Amino acid sequence: MTCSAPRIDHGFLSNGYGAALISRDASVEWLSVPRFDSPPIFCSLLDEDLDCALRIRAVGAAPAGRHYIRGSLALETVLRADGGTVKVRDVMPRSEPALMRLIESEVPIELTANPMFGYGLINPAYEQKDDGALFADPTSDQSLEIRIRWSSPPAAAGRGRWRLEPGSGHVMVLYSAERGYGLFSPKADVYAAPDEAFGSTLNYWRSELGMSAITPPGWARRVYTTSLKVLLGLKYAPSGALVSSPTTSLPESVGEGRNWDYRFAWVRDSSVAAEALVAAGLVVDAREVLDFLFSVLDPSSKPFNYVLFSVDGSPPPPERELGWLSGFACSRPVRSGNAAALQLQLDIEGEFMAALNSYYRATGDVEYLRGRWWAVESIARYVMRNYSRPDAGIWEERGIERHHIHSKVMMWYALHAASEMARDLGELDEAGKWSAAAASLREWILENAWSDADGSFVSYPGSHDVDASLLVMPIYGFVKANDRMFASTLQRIEEELVDDGLVYRYRRDFLGPARHPFALAGAWMARAKLRLGDRRGAESYLRKLASCANDLGLLGEHIDAGTCEARGNYPHVFSHAGLIHAIAELVAT
Image (tube, rainbow, N blue to C red; front, top):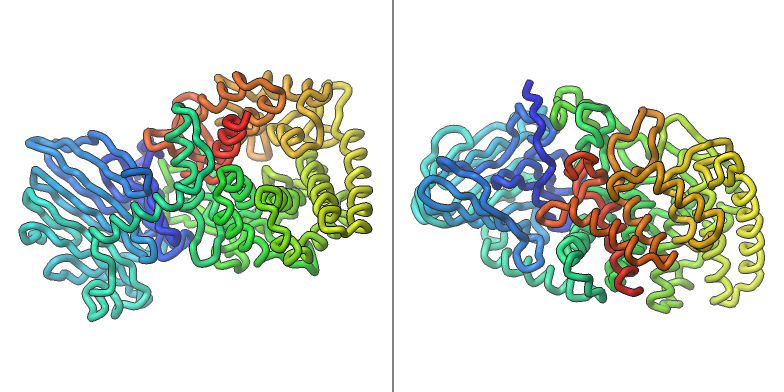
Protein backbone atom coordinates (compact mmCIF):
# COMPACT_ATOMS: atom_id res chain seq x y z
CA MET A 1 0.00 0.00 0.00
CA THR A 2 1.38 3.38 -1.03
CA CYS A 3 0.96 6.11 1.56
CA SER A 4 2.63 9.15 0.05
CA ALA A 5 1.49 12.69 0.81
CA PRO A 6 0.12 14.05 -2.48
CA ARG A 7 -1.18 17.59 -2.66
CA ILE A 8 -4.78 18.54 -3.32
CA ASP A 9 -3.81 21.13 -5.90
CA HIS A 10 -5.83 20.12 -8.92
CA GLY A 11 -7.58 21.99 -11.67
CA PHE A 12 -11.37 21.77 -11.50
CA LEU A 13 -13.58 21.19 -14.54
CA SER A 14 -17.36 20.93 -14.74
CA ASN A 15 -20.07 20.77 -17.36
CA GLY A 16 -22.98 21.34 -14.97
CA TYR A 17 -23.56 17.60 -14.65
CA GLY A 18 -20.30 16.06 -13.45
CA ALA A 19 -16.77 17.13 -12.66
CA ALA A 20 -13.10 16.37 -13.22
CA LEU A 21 -9.95 17.10 -11.21
CA ILE A 22 -6.68 17.36 -13.13
CA SER A 23 -3.25 17.37 -11.49
CA ARG A 24 -0.37 19.67 -12.38
CA ASP A 25 1.13 16.97 -14.60
CA ALA A 26 -2.11 16.83 -16.66
CA SER A 27 -3.34 13.56 -15.13
CA VAL A 28 -7.11 13.14 -14.78
CA GLU A 29 -7.32 11.75 -11.25
CA TRP A 30 -11.05 12.29 -10.72
CA LEU A 31 -13.91 12.07 -13.22
CA SER A 32 -17.48 11.75 -11.99
CA VAL A 33 -19.99 11.31 -14.80
CA PRO A 34 -22.83 11.41 -15.63
CA ARG A 35 -23.58 13.17 -12.31
CA PHE A 36 -21.58 14.80 -9.56
CA ASP A 37 -22.60 12.00 -7.20
CA SER A 38 -21.83 9.16 -9.61
CA PRO A 39 -19.01 6.80 -8.63
CA PRO A 40 -15.87 8.39 -10.12
CA ILE A 41 -14.60 6.50 -13.14
CA PHE A 42 -11.12 7.92 -12.64
CA CYS A 43 -10.61 7.70 -8.90
CA SER A 44 -6.91 7.57 -8.03
CA LEU A 45 -7.43 10.31 -5.42
CA LEU A 46 -9.16 7.67 -3.29
CA ASP A 47 -6.49 4.97 -3.66
CA GLU A 48 -3.08 5.75 -5.12
CA ASP A 49 -2.23 2.09 -5.74
CA LEU A 50 -5.14 1.63 -8.13
CA ASP A 51 -3.71 4.25 -10.52
CA CYS A 52 -7.29 4.71 -11.66
CA ALA A 53 -6.46 7.71 -13.86
CA LEU A 54 -5.94 9.05 -17.38
CA ARG A 55 -2.31 10.09 -17.78
CA ILE A 56 0.01 11.65 -20.34
CA ARG A 57 3.68 10.80 -20.02
CA ALA A 58 6.80 11.94 -21.83
CA VAL A 59 10.49 11.43 -21.13
CA GLY A 60 11.66 13.99 -18.60
CA ALA A 61 8.25 15.66 -18.43
CA ALA A 62 7.58 18.10 -15.60
CA PRO A 63 4.83 20.67 -15.01
CA ALA A 64 5.67 24.04 -16.58
CA GLY A 65 2.48 26.01 -15.96
CA ARG A 66 -1.29 26.01 -16.22
CA HIS A 67 -4.17 28.45 -16.37
CA TYR A 68 -7.86 28.71 -17.04
CA ILE A 69 -8.37 29.95 -20.58
CA ARG A 70 -9.97 33.40 -20.89
CA GLY A 71 -11.87 33.17 -17.61
CA SER A 72 -13.55 29.86 -18.45
CA LEU A 73 -13.40 26.42 -16.90
CA ALA A 74 -11.32 25.24 -19.84
CA LEU A 75 -7.88 24.39 -18.49
CA GLU A 76 -4.53 24.58 -20.27
CA THR A 77 -1.61 22.62 -18.80
CA VAL A 78 1.94 22.80 -20.16
CA LEU A 79 4.58 20.12 -19.56
CA ARG A 80 8.26 20.59 -20.38
CA ALA A 81 9.93 17.36 -21.48
CA ASP A 82 13.27 16.28 -22.94
CA GLY A 83 13.29 17.82 -26.40
CA GLY A 84 10.19 20.01 -26.24
CA THR A 85 6.84 20.79 -24.66
CA VAL A 86 3.43 19.19 -24.36
CA LYS A 87 0.35 21.43 -24.22
CA VAL A 88 -2.97 20.00 -23.05
CA ARG A 89 -6.27 21.88 -23.16
CA ASP A 90 -9.07 20.18 -21.23
CA VAL A 91 -12.77 20.90 -21.47
CA MET A 92 -16.00 19.18 -20.44
CA PRO A 93 -18.71 19.88 -23.04
CA ARG A 94 -21.70 21.50 -21.40
CA SER A 95 -24.34 18.80 -21.94
CA GLU A 96 -22.32 15.63 -22.48
CA PRO A 97 -20.88 13.16 -19.95
CA ALA A 98 -17.52 13.68 -21.59
CA LEU A 99 -14.02 15.09 -21.25
CA MET A 100 -12.12 16.38 -24.28
CA ARG A 101 -8.35 16.80 -24.32
CA LEU A 102 -6.82 18.87 -27.14
CA ILE A 103 -3.10 18.07 -27.24
CA GLU A 104 -0.09 19.54 -29.02
CA SER A 105 3.21 17.78 -28.45
CA GLU A 106 6.74 18.40 -29.68
CA VAL A 107 7.88 15.06 -28.28
CA PRO A 108 6.64 11.47 -28.29
CA ILE A 109 4.06 10.86 -25.57
CA GLU A 110 2.39 7.88 -23.98
CA LEU A 111 -1.31 7.98 -23.12
CA THR A 112 -2.55 5.55 -20.45
CA ALA A 113 -6.13 5.03 -19.30
CA ASN A 114 -7.25 2.87 -16.39
CA PRO A 115 -10.93 3.59 -15.67
CA MET A 116 -12.86 1.59 -13.10
CA PHE A 117 -16.47 1.26 -12.05
CA GLY A 118 -18.09 1.00 -8.63
CA TYR A 119 -15.53 3.13 -6.78
CA GLY A 120 -12.62 1.05 -8.06
CA LEU A 121 -14.27 -2.26 -7.21
CA ILE A 122 -15.08 -3.34 -10.79
CA ASN A 123 -12.39 -3.79 -13.44
CA PRO A 124 -13.93 -3.20 -16.86
CA ALA A 125 -13.88 -5.55 -19.79
CA TYR A 126 -11.61 -4.19 -22.52
CA GLU A 127 -12.19 -3.95 -26.25
CA GLN A 128 -9.48 -2.45 -28.46
CA LYS A 129 -10.67 -0.18 -31.27
CA ASP A 130 -8.78 1.15 -34.30
CA ASP A 131 -8.43 4.60 -32.72
CA GLY A 132 -9.18 3.96 -29.08
CA ALA A 133 -10.89 1.52 -26.75
CA LEU A 134 -14.13 0.62 -25.01
CA PHE A 135 -14.12 -0.15 -21.28
CA ALA A 136 -17.34 -1.98 -20.37
CA ASP A 137 -18.79 -2.63 -16.92
CA PRO A 138 -19.42 -6.41 -16.84
CA THR A 139 -22.18 -5.96 -14.25
CA SER A 140 -24.27 -3.44 -16.22
CA ASP A 141 -24.63 -1.75 -19.60
CA GLN A 142 -22.48 1.27 -18.75
CA SER A 143 -19.18 1.90 -20.45
CA LEU A 144 -16.42 4.40 -20.94
CA GLU A 145 -15.04 4.97 -24.42
CA ILE A 146 -11.82 6.66 -25.43
CA ARG A 147 -11.27 7.84 -28.98
CA ILE A 148 -7.94 9.25 -30.18
CA ARG A 149 -7.65 11.43 -33.27
CA TRP A 150 -4.01 12.26 -33.95
CA SER A 151 -1.88 13.64 -36.78
CA SER A 152 -0.39 10.16 -37.19
CA PRO A 153 -2.00 6.82 -36.26
CA PRO A 154 -1.75 6.05 -32.52
CA ALA A 155 0.21 2.89 -31.74
CA ALA A 156 -1.53 0.57 -29.30
CA ALA A 157 0.95 -0.57 -26.63
CA GLY A 158 -1.22 -2.75 -24.40
CA ARG A 159 -4.43 -2.48 -22.44
CA GLY A 160 -5.38 1.21 -22.20
CA ARG A 161 -1.98 2.33 -23.49
CA TRP A 162 -1.01 4.18 -26.67
CA ARG A 163 2.14 5.80 -28.03
CA LEU A 164 1.75 9.03 -29.98
CA GLU A 165 4.44 10.60 -32.15
CA PRO A 166 5.05 14.37 -32.03
CA GLY A 167 2.04 16.13 -33.47
CA SER A 168 -1.42 17.27 -32.45
CA GLY A 169 -4.94 16.00 -32.07
CA HIS A 170 -7.48 15.20 -29.41
CA VAL A 171 -8.60 12.54 -27.00
CA MET A 172 -12.30 12.21 -26.24
CA VAL A 173 -13.54 10.37 -23.17
CA LEU A 174 -17.26 9.58 -23.17
CA TYR A 175 -19.42 7.79 -20.59
CA SER A 176 -22.44 5.87 -21.87
CA ALA A 177 -25.20 4.34 -19.79
CA GLU A 178 -25.99 2.11 -22.80
CA ARG A 179 -23.15 0.72 -24.87
CA GLY A 180 -24.98 1.15 -28.15
CA TYR A 181 -24.98 4.95 -27.94
CA GLY A 182 -21.30 5.83 -27.74
CA LEU A 183 -18.37 6.99 -29.84
CA PHE A 184 -18.18 3.75 -31.80
CA SER A 185 -21.90 3.58 -32.58
CA PRO A 186 -24.06 4.99 -35.40
CA LYS A 187 -24.91 7.83 -32.99
CA ALA A 188 -21.29 8.99 -32.81
CA ASP A 189 -21.72 11.94 -35.16
CA VAL A 190 -24.09 13.76 -32.77
CA TYR A 191 -21.37 14.36 -30.19
CA ALA A 192 -19.57 17.67 -30.12
CA ALA A 193 -16.41 18.20 -32.12
CA PRO A 194 -13.54 19.23 -29.85
CA ASP A 195 -12.93 22.65 -31.40
CA GLU A 196 -16.64 23.47 -31.29
CA ALA A 197 -16.95 22.26 -27.70
CA PHE A 198 -13.94 24.34 -26.73
CA GLY A 199 -15.28 27.50 -28.36
CA SER A 200 -18.80 27.09 -27.02
CA THR A 201 -17.45 26.53 -23.51
CA LEU A 202 -15.50 29.78 -23.67
CA ASN A 203 -18.61 31.60 -24.91
CA TYR A 204 -20.72 30.10 -22.13
CA TRP A 205 -18.39 31.29 -19.39
CA ARG A 206 -17.98 34.71 -20.99
CA SER A 207 -21.76 35.08 -20.93
CA GLU A 208 -22.15 33.85 -17.34
CA LEU A 209 -19.34 35.86 -15.79
CA GLY A 210 -20.25 38.96 -17.76
CA MET A 211 -23.31 39.31 -15.54
CA SER A 212 -21.24 39.93 -12.41
CA ALA A 213 -21.76 43.42 -11.01
CA ILE A 214 -18.53 43.45 -8.98
CA THR A 215 -15.11 44.71 -10.04
CA PRO A 216 -12.78 43.31 -7.36
CA PRO A 217 -9.44 44.88 -6.47
CA GLY A 218 -6.42 43.53 -8.34
CA TRP A 219 -5.21 41.19 -5.59
CA ALA A 220 -8.66 39.58 -5.42
CA ARG A 221 -9.49 39.32 -9.12
CA ARG A 222 -8.24 35.79 -9.77
CA VAL A 223 -9.74 34.19 -6.67
CA TYR A 224 -13.02 36.12 -7.08
CA THR A 225 -13.49 35.03 -10.69
CA THR A 226 -12.55 31.45 -9.90
CA SER A 227 -14.95 31.47 -6.95
CA LEU A 228 -17.80 32.43 -9.24
CA LYS A 229 -16.85 29.62 -11.60
CA VAL A 230 -16.81 27.12 -8.74
CA LEU A 231 -20.32 28.08 -7.64
CA LEU A 232 -21.68 27.98 -11.17
CA GLY A 233 -19.72 24.86 -12.00
CA LEU A 234 -21.13 22.94 -9.04
CA LYS A 235 -24.73 23.73 -9.97
CA TYR A 236 -26.41 20.64 -11.41
CA ALA A 237 -27.93 22.05 -14.57
CA PRO A 238 -31.10 19.91 -14.83
CA SER A 239 -32.37 20.84 -11.35
CA GLY A 240 -30.43 23.84 -10.02
CA ALA A 241 -29.11 21.79 -7.09
CA LEU A 242 -25.75 23.10 -5.95
CA VAL A 243 -23.45 20.43 -4.56
CA SER A 244 -21.09 21.40 -1.76
CA SER A 245 -18.07 19.80 -3.43
CA PRO A 246 -17.41 17.42 -6.33
CA THR A 247 -15.46 14.99 -4.12
CA THR A 248 -15.87 12.57 -1.28
CA SER A 249 -13.50 11.65 1.54
CA LEU A 250 -10.64 14.04 0.88
CA PRO A 251 -9.52 14.35 4.49
CA GLU A 252 -9.78 17.38 6.72
CA SER A 253 -6.60 16.05 8.33
CA VAL A 254 -4.41 13.52 6.54
CA GLY A 255 -4.34 10.12 8.24
CA GLU A 256 -7.44 10.73 10.38
CA GLY A 257 -11.08 9.78 9.96
CA ARG A 258 -12.61 13.19 9.18
CA ASN A 259 -13.50 12.08 5.68
CA TRP A 260 -16.99 12.89 4.42
CA ASP A 261 -19.02 12.75 1.22
CA TYR A 262 -19.98 16.28 0.09
CA ARG A 263 -21.44 15.53 -3.37
CA PHE A 264 -24.93 16.58 -2.30
CA ALA A 265 -26.97 19.76 -2.13
CA TRP A 266 -26.85 20.93 1.50
CA VAL A 267 -29.64 23.39 2.25
CA ARG A 268 -27.20 25.53 4.24
CA ASP A 269 -24.38 25.54 1.70
CA SER A 270 -26.76 26.13 -1.20
CA SER A 271 -28.38 29.04 0.60
CA VAL A 272 -25.03 30.64 1.43
CA ALA A 273 -24.04 30.22 -2.22
CA ALA A 274 -27.31 31.77 -3.44
CA GLU A 275 -26.70 34.77 -1.18
CA ALA A 276 -23.21 35.14 -2.63
CA LEU A 277 -24.53 34.94 -6.19
CA VAL A 278 -27.00 37.71 -5.40
CA ALA A 279 -24.19 39.83 -3.95
CA ALA A 280 -22.23 39.28 -7.17
CA GLY A 281 -25.21 40.31 -9.32
CA LEU A 282 -25.88 36.81 -10.70
CA VAL A 283 -29.51 36.86 -9.60
CA VAL A 284 -30.77 34.46 -12.28
CA ASP A 285 -28.37 31.77 -11.11
CA ALA A 286 -29.31 32.51 -7.50
CA ARG A 287 -32.97 32.08 -8.36
CA GLU A 288 -32.25 28.69 -9.94
CA VAL A 289 -30.68 27.53 -6.68
CA LEU A 290 -33.65 28.89 -4.73
CA ASP A 291 -36.05 27.14 -7.09
CA PHE A 292 -34.38 23.83 -6.32
CA LEU A 293 -34.65 24.47 -2.59
CA PHE A 294 -38.33 25.38 -2.96
CA SER A 295 -38.83 22.12 -4.88
CA VAL A 296 -37.69 20.04 -1.87
CA LEU A 297 -39.41 22.17 0.79
CA ASP A 298 -42.23 20.40 2.63
CA PRO A 299 -44.89 22.75 4.05
CA SER A 300 -46.53 19.97 6.07
CA SER A 301 -43.60 19.09 8.34
CA LYS A 302 -40.13 20.43 9.02
CA PRO A 303 -39.69 22.53 5.88
CA PHE A 304 -36.38 20.89 5.04
CA ASN A 305 -36.79 17.42 6.44
CA TYR A 306 -33.32 16.49 5.22
CA VAL A 307 -30.31 18.75 5.62
CA LEU A 308 -28.98 17.55 2.28
CA PHE A 309 -30.52 16.21 -0.91
CA SER A 310 -29.39 14.30 -3.97
CA VAL A 311 -28.97 16.44 -7.06
CA ASP A 312 -32.34 15.36 -8.46
CA GLY A 313 -34.11 16.35 -5.22
CA SER A 314 -34.53 12.82 -3.91
CA PRO A 315 -33.49 11.82 -0.37
CA PRO A 316 -29.78 11.16 -0.03
CA PRO A 317 -28.46 7.59 0.04
CA PRO A 318 -27.32 6.05 3.34
CA GLU A 319 -23.73 6.49 4.41
CA ARG A 320 -21.47 3.51 3.90
CA GLU A 321 -17.75 2.86 4.13
CA LEU A 322 -15.87 1.64 1.06
CA GLY A 323 -13.38 -0.58 2.86
CA TRP A 324 -11.53 -1.74 -0.25
CA LEU A 325 -10.15 1.78 -0.85
CA SER A 326 -7.10 2.98 1.08
CA GLY A 327 -8.16 6.62 0.92
CA PHE A 328 -6.29 9.78 0.02
CA ALA A 329 -2.79 9.41 1.52
CA CYS A 330 -4.16 6.33 3.39
CA SER A 331 -6.80 8.41 5.17
CA ARG A 332 -9.52 5.89 5.91
CA PRO A 333 -12.42 5.42 5.73
CA VAL A 334 -13.63 6.39 2.28
CA ARG A 335 -17.34 7.11 2.49
CA SER A 336 -20.26 7.39 0.10
CA GLY A 337 -23.41 9.04 1.38
CA ASN A 338 -23.52 11.24 4.46
CA ALA A 339 -25.23 10.35 7.74
CA ALA A 340 -25.63 14.05 8.56
CA ALA A 341 -28.84 13.69 6.56
CA LEU A 342 -30.36 12.06 9.66
CA GLN A 343 -29.60 14.98 11.94
CA LEU A 344 -31.96 17.66 13.19
CA GLN A 345 -30.38 20.97 12.18
CA LEU A 346 -32.54 23.95 13.01
CA ASP A 347 -30.44 26.72 11.47
CA ILE A 348 -30.98 25.74 7.83
CA GLU A 349 -34.40 27.34 7.41
CA GLY A 350 -32.77 30.60 8.56
CA GLU A 351 -30.01 30.39 5.93
CA PHE A 352 -32.64 29.70 3.30
CA MET A 353 -34.66 32.72 4.42
CA ALA A 354 -31.50 34.84 4.23
CA ALA A 355 -30.98 33.75 0.61
CA LEU A 356 -34.61 34.40 -0.27
CA ASN A 357 -34.60 37.78 1.44
CA SER A 358 -31.36 38.75 -0.33
CA TYR A 359 -32.88 37.84 -3.69
CA TYR A 360 -36.11 39.71 -2.95
CA ARG A 361 -34.33 42.86 -1.73
CA ALA A 362 -31.96 42.86 -4.72
CA THR A 363 -34.62 42.32 -7.38
CA GLY A 364 -37.86 43.65 -5.89
CA ASP A 365 -39.47 40.53 -7.38
CA VAL A 366 -42.74 40.69 -5.44
CA GLU A 367 -44.48 38.17 -7.67
CA TYR A 368 -41.79 35.59 -7.00
CA LEU A 369 -42.26 36.11 -3.28
CA ARG A 370 -46.07 36.01 -3.46
CA GLY A 371 -46.00 32.82 -5.51
CA ARG A 372 -43.95 31.11 -2.81
CA TRP A 373 -45.55 32.65 0.25
CA TRP A 374 -46.76 29.23 1.32
CA ALA A 375 -43.11 28.33 1.98
CA VAL A 376 -42.44 31.45 4.06
CA GLU A 377 -45.53 30.73 6.14
CA SER A 378 -44.54 27.11 6.70
CA ILE A 379 -41.02 28.10 7.79
CA ALA A 380 -42.28 30.75 10.20
CA ARG A 381 -44.83 28.33 11.70
CA TYR A 382 -42.24 25.61 12.15
CA VAL A 383 -39.66 27.88 13.73
CA MET A 384 -42.23 29.33 16.15
CA ARG A 385 -43.10 25.82 17.33
CA ASN A 386 -39.57 24.45 17.51
CA TYR A 387 -37.06 27.13 18.43
CA SER A 388 -36.80 25.80 21.98
CA ARG A 389 -35.45 22.42 20.79
CA PRO A 390 -31.76 21.41 20.80
CA ASP A 391 -30.14 20.37 17.52
CA ALA A 392 -26.93 19.12 15.90
CA GLY A 393 -26.07 22.57 14.61
CA ILE A 394 -23.93 23.85 11.78
CA TRP A 395 -20.89 21.76 12.74
CA GLU A 396 -22.88 18.52 12.54
CA GLU A 397 -21.39 16.80 15.57
CA ARG A 398 -22.64 13.24 15.53
CA GLY A 399 -24.69 11.92 18.41
CA ILE A 400 -24.83 15.30 20.15
CA GLU A 401 -27.70 17.79 20.34
CA ARG A 402 -27.43 21.13 22.13
CA HIS A 403 -28.99 24.55 22.14
CA HIS A 404 -26.45 25.90 19.66
CA ILE A 405 -26.46 29.68 19.66
CA HIS A 406 -25.80 29.86 15.94
CA SER A 407 -28.93 27.81 15.30
CA LYS A 408 -30.97 30.07 17.60
CA VAL A 409 -29.69 33.19 15.83
CA MET A 410 -30.62 31.75 12.43
CA MET A 411 -34.09 30.79 13.70
CA TRP A 412 -34.42 34.35 14.98
CA TYR A 413 -33.43 35.59 11.54
CA ALA A 414 -36.03 33.34 9.86
CA LEU A 415 -38.79 34.90 11.97
CA HIS A 416 -37.39 38.41 11.62
CA ALA A 417 -37.11 38.20 7.82
CA ALA A 418 -40.53 36.57 7.51
CA SER A 419 -42.03 39.42 9.51
CA GLU A 420 -40.40 42.05 7.30
CA MET A 421 -41.53 40.35 4.11
CA ALA A 422 -45.06 39.94 5.48
CA ARG A 423 -45.18 43.66 6.20
CA ASP A 424 -44.07 44.40 2.64
CA LEU A 425 -46.89 42.25 1.28
CA GLY A 426 -49.51 43.74 3.59
CA GLU A 427 -49.85 40.58 5.68
CA LEU A 428 -49.93 42.59 8.89
CA ASP A 429 -51.36 39.93 11.23
CA GLU A 430 -48.59 37.52 10.32
CA ALA A 431 -46.00 40.29 10.49
CA GLY A 432 -46.98 41.13 14.05
CA LYS A 433 -47.15 37.52 15.19
CA TRP A 434 -43.77 36.60 13.72
CA SER A 435 -42.15 39.80 14.98
CA ALA A 436 -43.32 39.05 18.52
CA ALA A 437 -41.94 35.50 18.30
CA ALA A 438 -38.61 36.83 17.00
CA ALA A 439 -38.43 39.29 19.92
CA SER A 440 -39.10 36.52 22.41
CA LEU A 441 -36.41 34.31 20.89
CA ARG A 442 -33.95 37.21 20.82
CA GLU A 443 -34.53 37.78 24.53
CA TRP A 444 -33.84 34.09 25.21
CA ILE A 445 -30.62 34.19 23.21
CA LEU A 446 -29.30 37.31 24.95
CA GLU A 447 -30.05 35.78 28.32
CA ASN A 448 -28.66 32.29 27.64
CA ALA A 449 -25.86 32.83 25.12
CA TRP A 450 -23.89 35.21 27.32
CA SER A 451 -21.41 33.92 29.89
CA ASP A 452 -20.49 36.37 32.64
CA ALA A 453 -17.64 34.11 33.65
CA ASP A 454 -16.12 34.24 30.17
CA GLY A 455 -17.16 37.75 29.23
CA SER A 456 -18.49 36.69 25.83
CA PHE A 457 -21.19 34.90 23.95
CA VAL A 458 -20.51 31.16 23.96
CA SER A 459 -21.29 28.29 21.63
CA TYR A 460 -24.22 27.00 23.69
CA PRO A 461 -25.58 27.61 27.21
CA GLY A 462 -23.23 26.20 29.81
CA SER A 463 -20.26 26.17 27.46
CA HIS A 464 -17.11 28.20 28.04
CA ASP A 465 -16.04 28.04 24.39
CA VAL A 466 -16.46 30.33 21.43
CA ASP A 467 -16.73 29.11 17.87
CA ALA A 468 -16.55 30.94 14.55
CA SER A 469 -20.28 30.65 13.82
CA LEU A 470 -20.86 33.38 16.42
CA LEU A 471 -19.39 35.78 13.84
CA VAL A 472 -22.69 35.70 11.94
CA MET A 473 -24.48 37.58 14.73
CA PRO A 474 -23.82 41.03 13.21
CA ILE A 475 -23.83 39.70 9.64
CA TYR A 476 -27.50 38.77 9.97
CA GLY A 477 -28.36 41.79 12.07
CA PHE A 478 -28.91 40.09 15.41
CA VAL A 479 -26.57 42.59 17.10
CA LYS A 480 -24.54 45.54 15.93
CA ALA A 481 -20.88 44.76 15.36
CA ASN A 482 -19.91 47.45 17.85
CA ASP A 483 -22.25 46.08 20.51
CA ARG A 484 -20.28 45.61 23.73
CA MET A 485 -21.22 41.96 24.07
CA PHE A 486 -20.26 41.10 20.51
CA ALA A 487 -17.05 43.15 20.67
CA SER A 488 -15.76 41.07 23.57
CA THR A 489 -16.82 37.89 21.75
CA LEU A 490 -14.94 38.98 18.65
CA GLN A 491 -11.88 39.67 20.75
CA ARG A 492 -12.01 36.14 22.19
CA ILE A 493 -12.39 34.61 18.74
CA GLU A 494 -9.38 36.51 17.47
CA GLU A 495 -7.32 35.53 20.50
CA GLU A 496 -8.31 31.86 20.58
CA LEU A 497 -9.25 30.82 17.04
CA VAL A 498 -6.98 32.86 14.75
CA ASP A 499 -3.54 31.69 13.72
CA ASP A 500 -1.50 33.71 11.21
CA GLY A 501 -4.60 35.34 9.76
CA LEU A 502 -6.55 32.09 9.35
CA VAL A 503 -9.61 31.27 11.47
CA TYR A 504 -10.44 27.91 13.03
CA ARG A 505 -14.12 27.08 13.38
CA TYR A 506 -13.45 25.78 16.91
CA ARG A 507 -10.58 24.22 18.82
CA ARG A 508 -12.03 20.75 19.33
CA ASP A 509 -15.16 18.69 18.75
CA PHE A 510 -16.45 15.15 19.25
CA LEU A 511 -13.56 13.76 17.17
CA GLY A 512 -10.85 15.69 19.02
CA PRO A 513 -8.76 18.77 18.16
CA ALA A 514 -9.49 20.71 14.98
CA ARG A 515 -6.27 20.47 12.99
CA HIS A 516 -6.76 23.16 10.37
CA PRO A 517 -8.49 26.53 9.87
CA PHE A 518 -11.87 26.74 8.14
CA ALA A 519 -11.90 28.95 5.04
CA LEU A 520 -15.47 30.24 5.44
CA ALA A 521 -14.66 31.44 8.96
CA GLY A 522 -12.06 33.82 7.52
CA ALA A 523 -14.68 35.34 5.25
CA TRP A 524 -17.08 35.70 8.19
CA MET A 525 -14.35 37.47 10.12
CA ALA A 526 -13.77 39.89 7.24
CA ARG A 527 -17.49 40.67 7.00
CA ALA A 528 -17.68 41.31 10.75
CA LYS A 529 -14.68 43.64 10.48
CA LEU A 530 -16.35 45.57 7.67
CA ARG A 531 -19.37 46.14 9.88
CA LEU A 532 -17.02 47.64 12.44
CA GLY A 533 -15.63 49.99 9.82
CA ASP A 534 -12.30 48.15 9.94
CA ARG A 535 -11.65 47.88 6.20
CA ARG A 536 -7.94 47.27 6.69
CA GLY A 537 -8.57 44.39 9.06
CA ALA A 538 -11.16 42.89 6.71
CA GLU A 539 -8.83 43.12 3.74
CA SER A 540 -6.04 41.49 5.73
CA TYR A 541 -8.16 38.39 6.38
CA LEU A 542 -9.29 38.23 2.75
CA ARG A 543 -5.77 38.66 1.40
CA LYS A 544 -4.67 35.76 3.59
CA LEU A 545 -7.43 33.55 2.22
CA ALA A 546 -6.59 34.58 -1.34
CA SER A 547 -2.91 33.83 -0.76
CA CYS A 548 -3.78 30.27 0.28
CA ALA A 549 -5.73 29.58 -2.89
CA ASN A 550 -3.69 27.69 -5.46
CA ASP A 551 -2.44 29.24 -8.69
CA LEU A 552 -5.87 28.70 -10.26
CA GLY A 553 -7.67 30.40 -7.36
CA LEU A 554 -9.12 27.21 -5.84
CA LEU A 555 -9.68 26.42 -2.15
CA GLY A 556 -10.71 23.38 -0.17
CA GLU A 557 -13.01 23.47 2.84
CA HIS A 558 -9.99 23.76 5.17
CA ILE A 559 -6.52 25.26 4.88
CA ASP A 560 -3.43 23.49 6.19
CA ALA A 561 -2.16 25.66 9.03
CA GLY A 562 1.46 24.90 8.21
CA THR A 563 1.59 24.86 4.42
CA CYS A 564 -1.50 26.80 3.27
CA GLU A 565 -2.52 23.78 1.17
CA ALA A 566 -6.12 22.73 0.66
CA ARG A 567 -7.56 20.19 3.07
CA GLY A 568 -10.94 18.49 3.00
CA ASN A 569 -13.17 18.15 -0.02
CA TYR A 570 -12.10 20.33 -2.92
CA PRO A 571 -13.08 22.79 -4.21
CA HIS A 572 -15.72 23.73 -1.66
CA VAL A 573 -18.76 25.94 -2.08
CA PHE A 574 -18.56 27.34 1.47
CA SER A 575 -15.04 28.67 0.93
CA HIS A 576 -15.72 30.25 -2.44
CA ALA A 577 -19.17 31.62 -1.54
CA GLY A 578 -17.72 33.23 1.56
CA LEU A 579 -14.98 34.91 -0.46
CA ILE A 580 -17.43 36.21 -3.07
CA HIS A 581 -19.73 37.73 -0.47
CA ALA A 582 -16.92 39.27 1.57
CA ILE A 583 -15.18 40.73 -1.50
CA ALA A 584 -18.49 42.15 -2.75
CA GLU A 585 -19.01 43.86 0.61
CA LEU A 586 -15.42 45.11 0.62
CA VAL A 587 -15.94 46.68 -2.82
CA ALA A 588 -19.20 48.28 -1.64
CA THR A 589 -17.59 50.03 1.36
